[in-house]
Length: 303
Ligand code: 13P
Ligand code: SF4
Image (tube, rainbow, N blue to C red):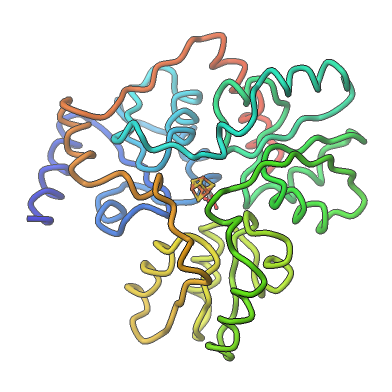
């Protein structure tokens, strides 16, 4: 049944000259039919270089919006319209506009997990894998980092010469992990390494052997032979367990489940390609151009 559905998707994909991009948090059955899988930076770079009529993005809305921002002439589909990162809506764009008016010399750095309207008010986007390098290259003395204060604190710690003003946003999933979770899991798995996403709170990040994006955690785990305590969405641990069945990949906390990232199913993908479901991303041109500036700056500053 699963294989049949995957085969139907692959033939629809061919008929429509479509490509499927999937975030690393997507289920293994979606990753199997994707043309490209990666973290949010890799997906943004890939989105700049697509030779197809239709792009179907399996992930959350801001990722599909980024593809549309970079590919205005292509049909961009989000298979499950309800899939949205809650952090993307934690700031009213007007507040950032007012901040910029009050601090005209400030560089506003936005985590890519933000709405298109919010990006349009910002100067540079970053992702978890690109933030330290990009922020290190920003010459402004005053940098406002929005919205994730955990990611911002990690970048600040890596770059003590920079002065970041942080917002009070956070990922509701990663922000639940505690120092007690680290102590409990390290006691249960004393020989395992701890790899965490920088969206986790500072007291967790400071105990980790690796702090990195979803793709960097996968890469770190793949390059080693020991057990890894996984401090990010459980799908990453499940995926590693499938790839390396003789090793253990316990999740740092059972709260590490992102319901939005789990919403998209193979059936959603099928219906979106068939034209009986999903949502086509549409965007006003002036908004698209305003949001494209910080995304282009991100890609340029990370090269
Ligand atoms: P990555 O940039 O690591 O893919 O992160 C996206 C995300 O939403 C993590 O929660
Ligand atoms: Fe957003 Fe957090 Fe889910 Fe990532 S894990 S998509 S940051 S809510």
